[in-house]
Length: 77
Image: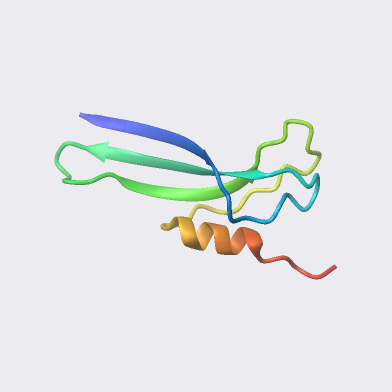
């Protein structure tokens, strides 16, 4: 049996969305396979504001910390 998981959690230690200044969320998706002893998740940070024009999101990463670190890194304009 293979199950797909989608989890969404509010992230406390992130900068706000650079476009709309609202709080982002941490998303985690993973697959559980009964032949494997654990579930492997991939994490991303994205803007949760439905009115946000840009709706920025990070790529998928293997750890929450790396996804948060990437989101908090801002490119100078």
